[in-house]
Image (cartoon, rainbow, N blue to C red):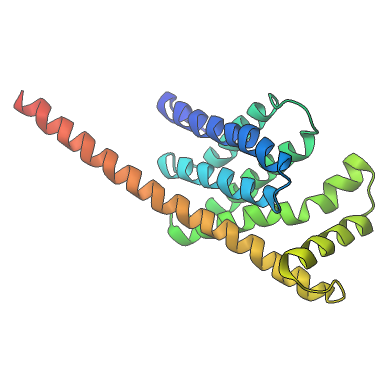
Length: 206
């Protein structure tokens, strides 16, 4: 990960933005007990990181943004932050791996990176809850089925069907975040290009 000063500043800005979203919006969503708050945060955070990758299309840039966001998360007040910090870093690593499969930024790669990154938030509790909170995998599974049943209006007896729909829901939300990041990145880049061109023309005239 060899970045010049300008690239480091750019990555730091996007990392701070992700961290601010986690600290501010995350607190609001959890206070209001909004369903799928973790998914919403993951999708928004990864969208920010993917836009950052658009401007610094080098391997390691998404991971770097995630590290900055994790550092920002340390400033959260109250509550348990180890789980969210693991989530942020894991999402950034997954997105980084997917993005590194292509030398140049591509829309479908961004979509897959967003989808798989957000999908991690569905499976993370099966790893972190037993380790950090001593909860059994069975309890995590039952909580997931209960959440899916309430969200989808399906009886918990259809466990595998609920799981399939939840995986699809998480992936679609993440994919939309990846697609949104691509479109935003393109728009910003085009506007910046036009601004730089206009400034260059004015400079030559003067």
